[in-house]
Image 1: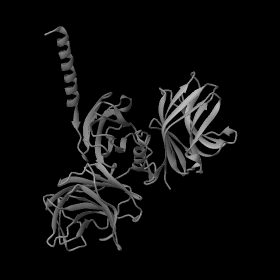
Image 2 (image 1 turned 90 degrees about the vertical axis):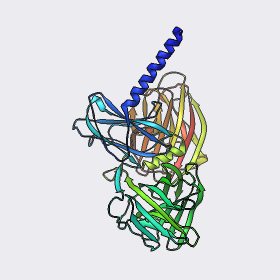
Image 3 (image 1 turned 30 degrees about the vertical axis):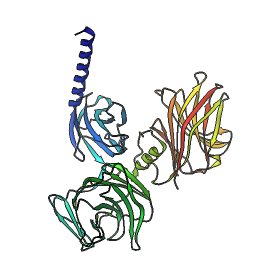
Length: 506
C-alpha cells in the first residue's frame, strides 16, 4: 500500500467515524410527543426529522428549569441552517418557537436545542403538524361522539379507529363532531385507511361544516386525483374538478390528508405535501370538520374506510394577535407570499401584481435616485420584496432600497440598507425625510441582500435578509412602488435588483 493511499484511507475512516458519532448523537423526534431533555451549560442536543418538501411544521421548546433559555435551530442534512429562534415573546417567556415553517425540500433535518448565553437546564421539545397549539385531538380509542345525518352511513369504533361504512349508489356520507366550532386559521390532519373496495373509492374530509349539507369537501379517489366541492342547500358546486398530482399515489389505500383553512382560502395536503390551493369565500362562518366517504353509481355500491389520529392545530396568539416572526425563509415570490400567509403576516388570498426579473440604477449624486416600476400602478396594502447587489465606487454611506406608497417626487416612503450597516424606513414629506424606523447592524456584511416590506393598514414591517428589523406605524396611503440608489455622500453607486415583486390583497 502506498503512503498516499494509506493517508486517503485514514482520512476516509476518520470522516466516517465523525459522521457515525454525529448520527448517534441525534435521535428521531416523533410527532405530537413532547420529548424531555437536559443540557449542561454550553451544551446542546439534536434530533432528526425526515419530511417531504412543503411539509408545514411547528416546533416548541419549553424550559422546565427556571433559568434555562432554550434556543431552536433547524438545519438541513448538509448542515445549512434553515431557521432558528431564541425567544418568541421576550421578556414574558424564554421559550423558543418555530411556528408554521414550510420545509423547503425533502430531506432529513436536524433540530438542535441549545441554551442562549451558554445557559443549561431541563426542557421539553414538541413537534407538531401545522401550528403550535392543539385545539382538537381524536385517537378514537374510546366512545365515538361523532354523528351522521344520513342512514346510509354507519359509524363504529374499530381497533382504535373510526370506521365509516356507506351503502347505496351515489351517496355522500359525512361523519362530524357536533357543537364544535373551529376558528380560522387552523390545520387539520387525519390518517386514512381504505378497507374496501380497493379498486374504486372516494374519501376525504370537510371544512367549515354547518349541519349535514353545508361544507367544503376535499376528496381523493383511487386514480390518484383530488377534488374540492362546495355543498350548500342549493346543491353541490365543483370548485376544482378531479385533478392528478405527482404526490398522490394511484390505488394507494393508506395515506394522510390535511387542510389548512384560512379566511377565503383552503390549502390541501396529501402525505404532508401541498397538492392544491383554492380561494373561495362562499362559506365564511366558523364550523366543524368532517370525515367523508362517497360511493359510485352501481346499485350495490358500498365503501368501508377507517380514520385515525385526527389533529387540529391553531397559531399561538399573544394578546389576541399573531406573533410577528423574527425570521423568514427567503425564496421565490410565490413561496414567500405563501409563507407570509401561513405565518399570518398577510391575509390569505391576494395575487402577484408585479414581478420584475432585473432592474439597474446608478447615481453619483447625494440623495435618492428612484426607478419607478409598474407603470404608475398604485398599491395600498401589499408586500414588496427584492434581492439587490450594491457596487459603490468607494466605501461610504451609500446603499440600495425600495420606494413605496409614492404619490409624487416629494411624497413617498424609502426602505433602505447601506454598506455601513444602517437600515430603516423613512417617509419623505416635501423636501425632507421625517423620522421613521432606523436600526444599525454592525455585522451586516457582503454586497448581496434581500429586502422585504409588508405594508399593512396599521404599520409597515421591515425584513432584511429574512430577519425582522422593526416596524413603523403610519397611516395607509395609496401609491406607486420602485427601486432606489441611496447616497449620503457624493459616491458613484450602482444597484442591481433581481426578482422585485409585489403581492397585493384587498
